[in-house]
Image 1 (cartoon, helix red, strand yellow):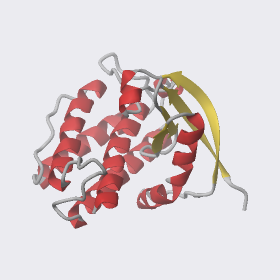
Image 2 (cartoon, helix red, strand yellow):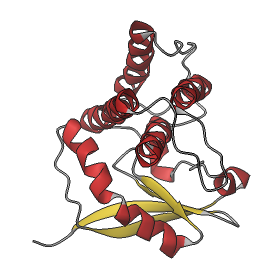
Image 3 (tube, one colour):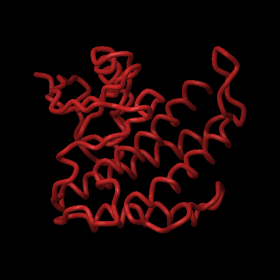
Image 4 (cartoon, rainbow, N blue to C red):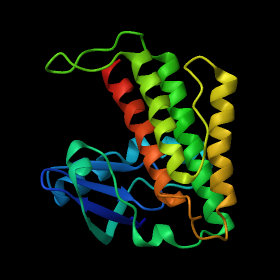
Length: 216
Protein backbone atom coordinates (compact mmCIF):
# COMPACT_ATOMS: atom_id res chain seq x y z
CA UNK A 1 0.00 0.00 0.00
CA UNK A 2 1.42 3.41 -0.94
CA UNK A 3 1.76 6.08 1.72
CA UNK A 4 -0.92 8.76 1.90
CA UNK A 5 0.12 12.28 0.90
CA UNK A 6 -0.64 14.77 3.67
CA UNK A 7 -0.47 18.53 2.98
CA UNK A 8 1.34 20.41 5.72
CA UNK A 9 2.52 23.92 6.32
CA UNK A 10 5.59 24.99 8.23
CA UNK A 11 5.99 28.02 10.44
CA UNK A 12 9.63 29.01 10.62
CA UNK A 13 10.91 30.91 13.63
CA UNK A 14 14.50 31.75 14.46
CA UNK A 15 14.81 28.98 17.07
CA UNK A 16 11.90 26.65 16.34
CA UNK A 17 9.88 25.41 13.39
CA UNK A 18 6.35 24.00 13.53
CA UNK A 19 4.94 21.55 11.02
CA UNK A 20 1.15 21.21 11.00
CA UNK A 21 -1.10 18.88 9.03
CA UNK A 22 -3.61 21.26 7.44
CA UNK A 23 -6.50 18.79 7.33
CA UNK A 24 -5.89 17.15 10.72
CA UNK A 25 -6.43 19.55 13.65
CA UNK A 26 -4.18 18.67 16.57
CA UNK A 27 -1.47 16.98 14.51
CA UNK A 28 1.26 19.59 14.82
CA UNK A 29 4.83 19.18 16.10
CA UNK A 30 7.94 21.27 16.29
CA UNK A 31 11.69 20.91 15.85
CA UNK A 32 14.82 22.99 15.63
CA UNK A 33 14.46 23.17 11.84
CA UNK A 34 12.02 22.09 9.12
CA UNK A 35 13.51 18.61 8.76
CA UNK A 36 13.27 17.96 12.50
CA UNK A 37 9.72 19.31 12.66
CA UNK A 38 8.57 17.05 9.82
CA UNK A 39 10.30 14.07 11.41
CA UNK A 40 8.52 14.80 14.69
CA UNK A 41 5.19 15.10 12.89
CA UNK A 42 5.74 11.72 11.23
CA UNK A 43 6.75 10.16 14.54
CA UNK A 44 3.45 11.22 16.08
CA UNK A 45 1.26 9.75 13.34
CA UNK A 46 0.67 6.58 15.38
CA UNK A 47 -0.34 8.64 18.39
CA UNK A 48 -2.70 10.74 16.30
CA UNK A 49 -4.39 7.73 14.69
CA UNK A 50 -6.72 7.04 17.68
CA UNK A 51 -7.94 10.65 17.48
CA UNK A 52 -8.93 10.15 13.86
CA UNK A 53 -10.69 6.91 14.81
CA UNK A 54 -12.65 8.74 17.51
CA UNK A 55 -13.77 11.16 14.82
CA UNK A 56 -14.72 8.15 12.64
CA UNK A 57 -12.31 9.16 9.92
CA UNK A 58 -9.97 6.95 7.95
CA UNK A 59 -6.33 7.66 8.80
CA UNK A 60 -3.20 6.02 7.44
CA UNK A 61 -0.14 6.42 9.74
CA UNK A 62 2.20 5.71 6.83
CA UNK A 63 2.38 9.13 5.19
CA UNK A 64 4.33 11.34 2.84
CA UNK A 65 4.24 15.04 3.62
CA UNK A 66 3.81 17.73 1.01
CA UNK A 67 4.77 21.20 2.26
CA UNK A 68 2.24 23.54 0.65
CA UNK A 69 3.09 26.75 2.49
CA UNK A 70 5.94 28.21 4.51
CA UNK A 71 5.26 31.06 6.93
CA UNK A 72 7.67 33.34 8.74
CA UNK A 73 7.26 32.70 12.44
CA UNK A 74 7.62 35.13 15.32
CA UNK A 75 8.29 35.15 19.03
CA UNK A 76 5.28 32.92 19.70
CA UNK A 77 6.65 30.33 17.28
CA UNK A 78 9.97 30.31 19.12
CA UNK A 79 8.16 30.16 22.48
CA UNK A 80 6.47 26.94 21.35
CA UNK A 81 3.10 27.79 19.81
CA UNK A 82 1.86 27.21 16.23
CA UNK A 83 0.81 30.80 15.86
CA UNK A 84 -0.10 31.57 12.25
CA UNK A 85 -2.95 30.64 9.87
CA UNK A 86 -2.44 29.70 6.25
CA UNK A 87 -3.79 31.71 3.33
CA UNK A 88 -6.33 28.99 2.68
CA UNK A 89 -7.69 29.27 6.22
CA UNK A 90 -9.34 32.56 5.21
CA UNK A 91 -11.33 30.98 2.41
CA UNK A 92 -14.90 29.69 2.66
CA UNK A 93 -15.35 26.32 4.30
CA UNK A 94 -17.59 23.70 2.78
CA UNK A 95 -20.21 22.07 5.00
CA UNK A 96 -18.32 18.78 4.86
CA UNK A 97 -15.01 20.42 5.83
CA UNK A 98 -16.64 22.28 8.73
CA UNK A 99 -18.14 19.01 9.94
CA UNK A 100 -14.82 17.23 9.63
CA UNK A 101 -12.98 19.94 11.54
CA UNK A 102 -15.57 19.86 14.30
CA UNK A 103 -15.40 16.07 14.59
CA UNK A 104 -11.63 16.12 14.95
CA UNK A 105 -11.67 18.95 17.47
CA UNK A 106 -14.23 17.07 19.56
CA UNK A 107 -12.05 13.94 19.32
CA UNK A 108 -9.05 15.89 20.64
CA UNK A 109 -11.11 17.04 23.62
CA UNK A 110 -12.28 13.47 24.28
CA UNK A 111 -8.68 12.29 24.14
CA UNK A 112 -7.59 14.96 26.59
CA UNK A 113 -10.45 14.22 29.01
CA UNK A 114 -9.87 10.46 28.92
CA UNK A 115 -6.13 10.86 29.40
CA UNK A 116 -6.55 13.23 32.35
CA UNK A 117 -9.20 11.01 33.95
CA UNK A 118 -6.91 7.99 34.17
CA UNK A 119 -3.71 9.87 35.07
CA UNK A 120 -2.35 10.20 38.61
CA UNK A 121 -2.81 13.58 40.27
CA UNK A 122 0.96 13.99 40.65
CA UNK A 123 2.93 13.62 37.43
CA UNK A 124 6.61 12.89 37.03
CA UNK A 125 8.69 16.03 36.87
CA UNK A 126 10.74 16.98 33.86
CA UNK A 127 14.52 16.63 33.68
CA UNK A 128 14.91 19.97 35.48
CA UNK A 129 12.19 19.30 38.02
CA UNK A 130 9.53 21.33 36.24
CA UNK A 131 6.07 20.68 34.87
CA UNK A 132 2.51 21.11 36.08
CA UNK A 133 0.63 18.32 37.80
CA UNK A 134 -2.55 16.90 36.27
CA UNK A 135 -5.14 19.26 37.76
CA UNK A 136 -3.11 22.32 36.90
CA UNK A 137 -2.78 21.13 33.31
CA UNK A 138 -6.54 20.64 33.09
CA UNK A 139 -7.12 24.15 34.46
CA UNK A 140 -4.50 25.58 32.11
CA UNK A 141 -6.13 24.06 29.02
CA UNK A 142 -9.54 25.45 29.99
CA UNK A 143 -8.12 28.90 30.74
CA UNK A 144 -6.28 28.97 27.44
CA UNK A 145 -9.45 28.13 25.55
CA UNK A 146 -11.13 31.03 27.32
CA UNK A 147 -8.42 33.28 25.87
CA UNK A 148 -8.75 31.72 22.42
CA UNK A 149 -12.49 31.99 21.81
CA UNK A 150 -12.73 35.80 21.54
CA UNK A 151 -10.51 35.42 18.47
CA UNK A 152 -13.43 33.68 16.73
CA UNK A 153 -16.03 36.15 17.99
CA UNK A 154 -17.30 34.08 20.91
CA UNK A 155 -18.00 35.99 24.12
CA UNK A 156 -18.10 33.22 26.68
CA UNK A 157 -16.04 32.32 29.70
CA UNK A 158 -14.91 28.72 30.15
CA UNK A 159 -16.35 26.67 32.98
CA UNK A 160 -14.03 25.75 35.86
CA UNK A 161 -12.50 22.27 36.11
CA UNK A 162 -15.03 19.75 37.38
CA UNK A 163 -18.05 21.58 35.97
CA UNK A 164 -18.84 18.88 33.42
CA UNK A 165 -22.02 20.53 32.18
CA UNK A 166 -20.39 23.93 31.85
CA UNK A 167 -17.41 22.53 29.96
CA UNK A 168 -19.76 20.65 27.65
CA UNK A 169 -21.73 23.84 26.94
CA UNK A 170 -18.55 25.84 26.35
CA UNK A 171 -17.23 23.31 23.86
CA UNK A 172 -20.61 23.05 22.17
CA UNK A 173 -20.51 26.81 21.62
CA UNK A 174 -17.12 26.50 19.93
CA UNK A 175 -18.37 23.68 17.74
CA UNK A 176 -21.38 25.84 16.91
CA UNK A 177 -19.06 28.51 15.55
CA UNK A 178 -17.28 25.86 13.46
CA UNK A 179 -20.55 24.60 12.00
CA UNK A 180 -21.84 28.13 11.37
CA UNK A 181 -18.70 28.96 9.40
CA UNK A 182 -19.71 26.65 6.55
CA UNK A 183 -20.18 28.52 3.30
CA UNK A 184 -18.94 31.84 4.68
CA UNK A 185 -15.75 33.81 4.88
CA UNK A 186 -14.62 34.76 8.41
CA UNK A 187 -16.78 37.46 10.01
CA UNK A 188 -15.33 40.89 10.69
CA UNK A 189 -15.03 40.21 14.44
CA UNK A 190 -12.94 37.06 13.89
CA UNK A 191 -9.22 37.59 14.32
CA UNK A 192 -8.61 33.90 13.68
CA UNK A 193 -10.15 31.95 10.78
CA UNK A 194 -12.03 28.88 11.97
CA UNK A 195 -9.67 26.23 10.50
CA UNK A 196 -6.69 27.79 12.26
CA UNK A 197 -8.62 28.27 15.51
CA UNK A 198 -9.61 24.61 15.47
CA UNK A 199 -6.01 23.53 14.85
CA UNK A 200 -4.75 25.78 17.65
CA UNK A 201 -7.32 24.59 20.18
CA UNK A 202 -6.92 20.96 19.15
CA UNK A 203 -3.11 21.15 19.23
CA UNK A 204 -3.12 22.62 22.73
CA UNK A 205 -5.47 19.98 24.15
CA UNK A 206 -3.70 17.11 22.41
CA UNK A 207 -0.21 18.33 23.20
CA UNK A 208 -1.08 18.37 26.90
CA UNK A 209 -2.84 15.01 26.65
CA UNK A 210 0.37 13.52 25.30
CA UNK A 211 2.37 15.32 28.00
CA UNK A 212 0.15 13.78 30.67
CA UNK A 213 0.61 10.34 29.10
CA UNK A 214 4.38 10.73 28.96
CA UNK A 215 4.62 11.93 32.57
CA UNK A 216 2.16 9.47 34.14
